[in-house]
Length: 110
Length: 122
Image 1: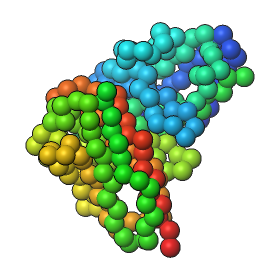
Image 2 (image 1 turned 60 degrees about the horizontal axis):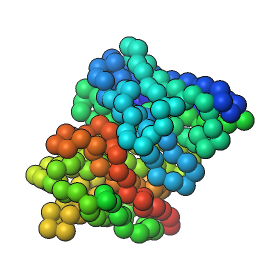
Image 3 (image 1 turned 30 degrees about the vertical axis):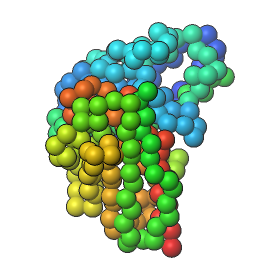
């Protein structure tokens, strides 16, 4: 299976909002509301930021939000902060009962 | 508190095997599936498979079928991932991760091990 498609990089200024897209197919993103987003700082372990398309784990800032339309999911970060600079990965459950990750997006806070 | 503690870094020759352990604590070991995810240097995350710590039943990503074995030892709350016939492209950090939802086969992961660097080098 090919990885979910994410932009390689996005950038924004402090205080702005950015959106990262994650495009799959009707066999993964479009099939279930089981899309997750992870944040990974350099040399660190991935951290779950969004699960089941739009739910946030306890402790994750409400500046992070998720949505989905058809085969494309999105992560929006509002009120960008310097600490948000990291790599972001989407993932989706698939009809094959596997988990598929996106290629990752590097977020730069200018 | 929930913790997943993995074994240390390892260096292997091409063609060899590596076995990484992941010791769980702070929760009911048999209640949550454990998954394995790897990350090659400078690359993205790649799902390898999962194991049901209750039954021991594994499911593997097709790419790794025949080369990977996931097992568990319930008595010490530890899961293992063995990868055989290593090639240079298997050089990566290998993570174990717990499925967020109890009893679910898992599609999102709330706790991760610290990662184990496996280097394949001649």
